Amino acid sequence: MKVTLPHMGNIYVAFSALFRALNIDFVIPPPCSRRTLSLGARHSPEFVCVPFKLTLGNYIEGLELGADTLLMAAGPGLCRFGYYAKLQAEVLRELGFQFQVVDTQPFEGGRITGIAKKIRWLANDAPWPKVIAAVRFALAKIAVLDDLERIIHCVRARELVKGTATKVWQEAIRAIDVAADSRTLHQTKTDYIEKLGSIPIAEDEQPLRVGIIGEFYVVLEPFSNGDVEIELGKLGVEVARTMFVSEWTKISLFLSALGLSPKREIFRAANPYLKRDVGGDGWESVGETVLYATHGFDGMVHLAPFTCMPEIIAQNILPTVSRQSDIPVLTITCDEQMGRAGLVTRLEAFVDLMRRRRRAPLHQGRGLNLAQSRKGR
Image (cartoon, rainbow, N blue to C red; front, side, top):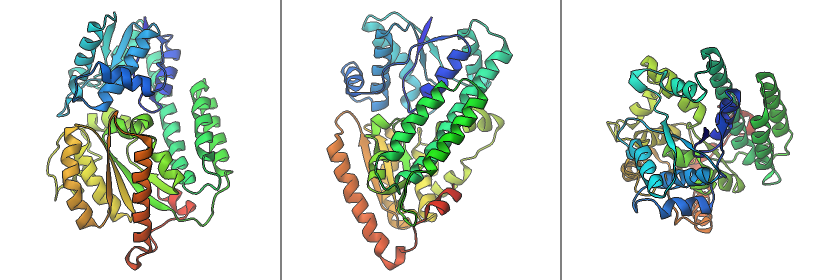
């Protein structure tokens, strides 16, 4: 059995650790590329969103490398994402591939152990203590990656030599990927925090601050959004987001299962504009815009896959939120037609707009230096 799954940011690092610990043969598809997107778009329904196309391309590339078992995300909810696993499996079988599907619906039978049982099944019914230890180590890797990425967001906007933080970030991902135990992982985190701290920066710089919101996949998969966070960093903009895999895991696998609602504040903030869940992350996009405005951010970048209904609903509400909360919002529609040059031009214009606003008396003093920024996270 050779298992593969699609990319979404650095989630492959966690699954590599999990499968290595359980002796499961794992085929990592090549990173998302123009070929991945071209393969997915060619065999997808015309109006389906870019997450469907890219993940389908990942599966095709994984199957080409010899995978025979596909780990596919599935689940309930208002978004059509819940149907993707079945539809993608049908497309792939029509293309002549032979495989079996393991869906990753975590709440099978209403119990949190659903995904853990499937992982155990993939590991030939390995003992539960071994499965639990492997899952914990995988989650620890994701937490370390997310902690470092938050620091990267601060440093990238202030570094004197643009691109330095991104190079360190790529080294850190590789080092975390090969870390074989918790002690090595902890030391790796410490080492890269020091490396990031040694990058020369403009100490007193108070860069523009932009909140990143939108659909989960396009926020977390850099290829799908044209590396928007890196491009904003090159323009001297500090980005922030609440959406991280570790946060999703904590909320979806643990807190929600216990009946807790950590997003209550977001939904309360969205309530004057949108009173109910519209599927996907549309409700969160509206509520987080209100909250980021309250915390003095200079602007918002809203990432929405083309034809994504929840984000289309949010997009139509955000102009009112922008006007009443006094925060500019730039919506970027992500699909295979999006070009890097056009994206950068739009970001440059948006940054110019925010810089002019920052100079206005009403908005002066909104920036934070590095120490204040890290303290606020």
